Length: 219
Ligand SMILES: C[S@@+](CC[C@H](N)C(=O)[O-])C[C@H]1O[C@@H](n2cnc3c(N)ncnc32)[C@H](O)[C@@H]1O
Image (cartoon, rainbow, N blue to C red; front, side, top):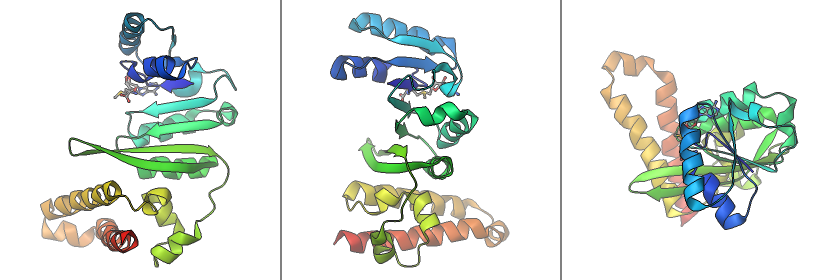
């Protein structure tokens, strides 16, 4: 596997220790790679370290799984968009975007990658979204239309089609936090700006509708 943006190298080291994987760890800057080198030596594991931008460090077909964790969804999308044809030679993808997962989901869809799993982990009141993706077009799940009438498939794709169909309480809490953040931002705007900000009003309306449908779906 390849861990792109490995920083401290914790994930890369655990992948070797727990899964006996052969791991390429890469980062765009040198400092984090020295940290990974030191951590791997301490744990007694061998990792192939490479410095470079995104997927440029990999040869076509070199790894089965590419992991990108801890970066923003925008950065991940930019890395995918900067990669050439080699992108399609890596079959399995794992992402953990810290911000803007919707930008990443849109990019995956445009590049022909289908989100196969999504889940949320909560730790100390912070939520972490994880996605796996494989090659293939996204086929709308008919349950989305049933449980979320009025929500277009494009909107569902942005919000997380697998999360929407996951009744877990942690997903509900995550959705509630997304809505709270938008509402807090809206409340901080002067009245005239709020009235003009149709995109924000629309996003809040959609999240409220989603929260309602998700809670019913949960019952
Ligand atoms: C916040 S750290 C995440 C570390 C680790 N993956 C995790 O999940 O804890 C993000 C790392 O991504 C690296 N990074 C940012 N843009 C990159 C790019 N285009 N290519 C490779 N690494 C990049 C940064 O240098 C930084 O070390």
